[in-house]
Structure formats: C-alpha cells, structure tokens
Amino acid sequence: MASKVYFIKDVTAEAVVKMYDKLGITLPGKVAVKVHSGEEGNQNYLKPEFWKPMVEHVNGTIVECNTAYEGERNYTDKHIKLLKRHGWNEFFDVDLMDAEGPDIEIPIKNGTHLKTDIMGKNFLNYDSMLVLSHFKGHPMGGYGGALKQLSIGCASCAGKVKIHSAGKYNKASEQDVVWNDLPEQNAFLESMAEAASAVVDHFGKNIAFINVMANMSVDCDCCAVAEDPCLKDIGILASLDPVAIDRACLDLVYASKDVGRDHFLERVTSRNGEHTPATAAKLGVGSLEYELIEL
Image (cartoon, helix red, strand yellow):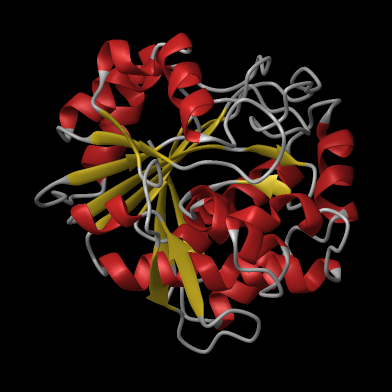
C-alpha cells in the first residue's frame, strides 16, 4: 500500500507546523524531538529558531546523542557546551540522551548485521518521537534524511560505532579504530536500515517524520567543513512513513532542473545511498511506494 507523503514548497517555520497537522496525529506523552544540532563550523544546519514553533506545538524535548568521530560533539562536556553555543538551550529543554551511562540496547528484528541497537539510557524516557530531518547529502551514507536520523542520529556513541562497523565494534572506546576498519559499503547502509527499524518498532504508531529540503549541500550537518548548498530549496515533506518520505525526497531531487542536481546526485549514487531505503523497505520499516500530496 502506498504511503501518504505531504509536500509544500514553502520553507518556513509556520509551514512545518502546517505539515505536521496534516498528518492527523497527536503524539502522546513525553515527546522526543530528534534534530541535527550541527557540528561546530557547519553553516548549513537548520537553526533552533526555525524549529521553535514546531517543537512548542508538540511540547517536545530536543534530543541528541554523542558522535563517534573527532569534533565538538563526541564527548558529553564538549557537546553540551556546543549545544548552548548554537542556541538550543535558549528555546528548548535539551536532552543529550547518552550524556551519562549506562547505555541500553533495543532489539532489531531480522537484522543481518545487527541484533540490537545501542542507545543512550534516556531514550527510554519518551513515549513518542517527532523526527525533524534536514535533508542533505552525507559523506558516507550518500544522503541524510529520516532514516539516517533514526539510525546514526538516535544511537549513542557506542551505537554509532556499532552501525558504522556493521556490528564488528560495540564500544564507544572503539570510536577511533572503527574509521580504520570500515566494512563494505552496503553492509554499512544495511546496518543503518536495521538500526532505524529498531527505533520505529520501539515507538510503533507514536512517531512522525518531517523532512526539510533546504540548504542542501552534498555534505552533512556533521561536517565541520562543508560545501555550501548546491540545490535551491525544494520544500517540506511530512509522513508517518520514514522510507516513503526519504524516497520522495530523492525523487524530487531527480525531478529537479536545478543546475546543482547532478552534483548532489553524484554524492548519493557514488555511495549507493538509495540502498538504505530499499533495505528498510524489505525490513518492513515502510514503503517505497507513496502518494505525494502537494498542498
């Protein structure tokens, strides 16, 4: 069955709220709002002011996790200081979910590479999740959208190490060695899809997705040195299906007549990025078939 994906060309904070309301869902209880808060030096991430009306609309808590690469976000003390410098604490309650251990593990059904996903212990404090994704390129995954937020984005430092190594490494202390011992590319992409499935299974129907196609560089918001955007803003998408919303974003890029389209798509295709939603669909995370409903 085709999933509904709503689309609007306006890229405004008010349009984000409008798109969420079109989904007809009320996220219950304590709502985790997953964003990409931006690496130090990155110029493209979506700022807290942009997300403010949406986060307030669901009375949510901004959630983030430590990274597994060098930068200002790989250790709790540095990460908390950067979150404050970027202004997140000025507007929201902010929860660095793996700020303190021990991590927890949630099961992955039918995983080839991963049997569990490692999360910060605070992950279990939430009843529902709103995944706010800045759609852009990614140096390893090809692109970053809802599935990337669910997998690498939601995992603790140890969880990120596990995903990037396709299950070979399982400890935050191994974050340095993993970059010298990376798996075959498809194994990494499949591990991302498997980790995403664990988060979707955990929340069930209490999860929603918004992708914003703006500031679209070939580089992720995790890059301290990133290319400037190569595509003009396309719009905002909303869905209850993370596979469908990512697939719709990719298709909108393919359909674009923008002069930067081929440069962006080279990043996606050179990393075989479309393998992630394809694998997620096989795992039952969502559907590659969708109905795009333009507002």
